[in-house]
Image (tube, rainbow, N blue to C red; front, side, top):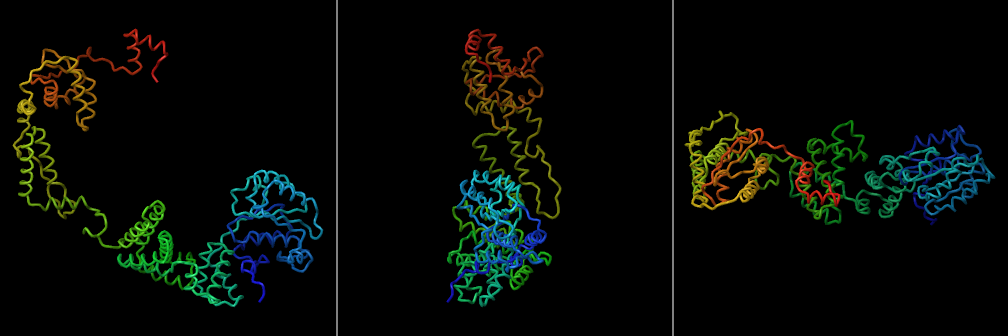
Length: 597
């Protein structure tokens, strides 16, 4: 039994034509060899395992070939090609920048560039993982890279192009290697399996290609692992067992159950999947990819976007016929939201279960039942329907009962009677959005509740007296000073409800004055504000009577005369006036050099 060599090394391409998935790039390199138009520096960049170092070796071999083929390939017969194949060439040097990234290593490399080649035309330096060089090493390498000797060619390879200094990149010809497609990987694995004498299922090779994520070296490594486990017969069942991959049939089954709104079977299936050790987040990601494939299978134009076997493609097309397009869009949106929140969730399984339940309810008919598990979209209309379906007599009893109960607690004012009647009538009459034939709107008449605007004016004074009686201050006759009046006025303004915040703020700037004790006069600057205060004059009088403990308090409102209106000063103007009127404040500000910030 000979020495075992892994497939990634055994089947490493030796010619440009053997390189997989980089057709445009290899054609460019072959044309450069044929024409002899060679740059002094090349930069090969791309993901791992796509052939950067392999192409660099093939290119270096072709450059030094004595008799290259008309296609730009090496002849494999001259002394230079034989030396390269036997790994004894002195013209091709490989340096791993990951372990030789210091300035001393680069200086040693620069010393070797001075010696011309003994056999062949060029000395080729292949620097792998060049992004690992330190900044000092890059700077030491920069001058030689810009103007190297005529017999020197540099080939730099990296997986992280963004980490290389722009000054280095600008001096190189850049070749971006593409990621391997699933189809290219599967085709190459078929050739390797046939050479090794293995039997295989195309679906199994497809799983290996997807697992490799675009890297041919990774695909060959996984292939060796699967072949060892399967003992030469690579089947789909063995491969997913060996790689611990979730069977794609689970995704097909979940979507079928979701379309049928079968939540119970989905939960049972999820439990069995998690019991096998699969992560819920990976399940959601895999299911999202599956739904995306089903969506692509709905149209023949997008069918080529499926990187799966022909057998799998037929299954996707069959399921696409069962699933509405809206269902697929909504499912993708729900799963994307789950993926975003998965890491932050403290109960990850619950999040996955809720996600699958939501997917299973996308096609479910509207259900207003309590067990539907969905938020009602017309909750407002539902409550209106309940109100409208209530008998009118029952509504009147309820309204009367509520009014009677409130009267026991405190007799409302005329304004409160009107507002409550309007609110109750609007609540009962409100527009019925679900009714098919609109009814004429009902109009509220104050006479229907025994109140008119004339009676409101007549009863204003009466209500004030009743408020004072309810507060128990009608008989109190305590004296109060101007200072006490101003303090209680400010306190009352602060207690005013939030909806009257604007009026309360303006009333704080007013100063009530005692004219003829206990009569109080309030001077208002404009007619609009005067009308607003007049509307609540009764409540203001009752509140101040209670605060001042004097039931004989009377409020008089008056519009201010032109000479009584004082200009509103800014903070700066107030400070100037304060310093002018108070020598102590002026001296303090001058001594400490104080001013407004």
